[in-house]
Length: 250
Image (cartoon, rainbow, N blue to C red; front, side, top):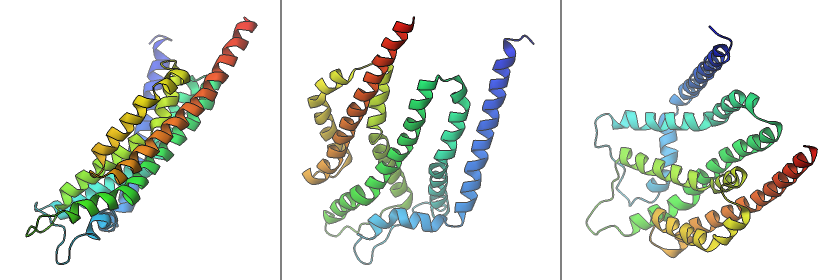
């Protein structure tokens, strides 16, 4: 084995170890939450169940749905709760290969991305779900009972959780594009009208067909874009100053 191959093998071994630790951690969290699987599902389904007409309820059309659906949600919750530990493992693996200024940027971005993803999910649960399900249950056809399948409901809310979670990552995406030199703060600011229109189109697609709920999603996305441009402008100026200083030293 040559000297050049040894570091690669060591990196692969470290990667395998960290992946193993991550899987074990997620499974431990899952086992801790398993007992509360039904309670977790009830919490997630509450925005719809609280709006269902009297004498109606959610249903299970598959024989194993009452068992597998809460189990699926519990595993999803375990992964979400494990994200900080997962990011720590990722950070511990890549940090040795980063420069000092890259470390000072990467750590806040990782933490901010997690917090923003959680914020997007929270926004969906407390703001969007009541509006969406209130609209859907309010326009039901006469003589047709509203009884949603628990598995389809879970798939639907998970899609919305991911959609809003990733939508709230807009500042991180903006900052990364500026830092990578793909776009500049001024070029992004010049595209503001298109960004605003795009936010409202996304809001229209992800929310009920009413102006109020569309605005509730579009405005936060727009504001998050502005935050990303503001922070990116500061980082861009710092990067330019650092490059000028390095050029003088050379």
